[in-house]
Length: 518
Image 1 (cartoon, rainbow, N blue to C red):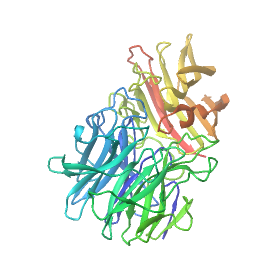
Image 2 (cartoon, rainbow, N blue to C red):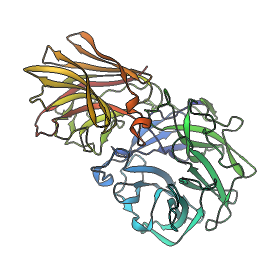
Image 3 (cartoon, rainbow, N blue to C red):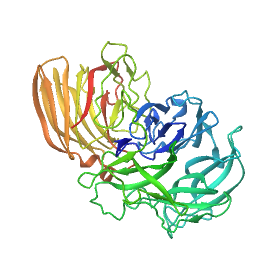
């Protein structure tokens, strides 16, 4: 027996998809424009997880140049069939729906197989029937004409795995459970006790998000909905409930025949969410031929008892994570914007340091910038970084950033000031810069920058020659929430350097980057 604590993946890990191979579980989530894309996790007990890589780990798999941070990769599905792992997803910025495959979930994963115009819409999933045939299920705009925003339908078609091509006719099988439903999406197919089951989300990804289910004896006919639809939602609990926006689920069973569902939900603070949509787990039972999510409770629980032996990893995802650089390998959890490549950083140029190269691209624009960040995982956290940086011009900056999107972020940067250096704190809100504080530095060496956040408010510190000074306090973090900034992502916090439009051959060296939940 083991205890799972919700969320099982804290921080911005939305649209979870899960599959089981023997007694191993694999889970993938959306990544949008962050690179590498589609983080992949492994567990033996559904409670403890390790990140084993990122499925889209190179630019040829993840073309997203110039995209907004909430574009790019939407809603992956991971499946396994006869020795091969499949991940299917949508790149809304380039190419549409595509599949990559691997023999080992740790990779390497193949180049994308794009399905082209034959596969319109988003949120694709794969289903392998008993006879070995593979079927594509997705959501697309109403082909008779979209009558209102979110007027979509769920459809199915056979997929030839040899050619990676849809064959035969497509058919709409479901429109959603509620009259005039919006956004029936995130569909997944399963087969149990002679029925094909369709689990999907509807109501949008915000306050009305929910999970519904339908079934049929045949794939190619209209499905019947569960009389209890939607079978799960937190929308009736009110906006002040500590977990909101629950939906977008994927079912999985264990080796003992017990069933579970992973889904996304948001934990707000002061009615705002800056961690995005996280991954939660719930128990599932079957009654009268239909799944019941979180039986006897009807909502996501803080903890679940899982009747599997506890299996811990040396480095887990949940809980209070502490990060630092080691060896010559960049941690899988560090992400860049659009790309993360050797042209941007090095762990070899200076032993014990991460070097970020000062490029002209700016974090206030939709560009591939010199930025490496980690997901925010709590509303109480502390970030500190030791930065060694000598700006050559007044345009060059380096430091740490709390990043929601290009138009909304908080920067703590070392800048050139007269003949010396200074630290400047800038709130960048709706593409407008507001300087909150600035202090001259007295030395030319390493400086520690620190951000301490508590429930949507933060303090900023600088430490130089052993002296820690508060630069700013009660910094409002609400502008960096989804409710204020828009989009689908949570905040990341990371290291950054730029020459802000000018050519540069400079660099910033980071001695450490520590993130700690408080």
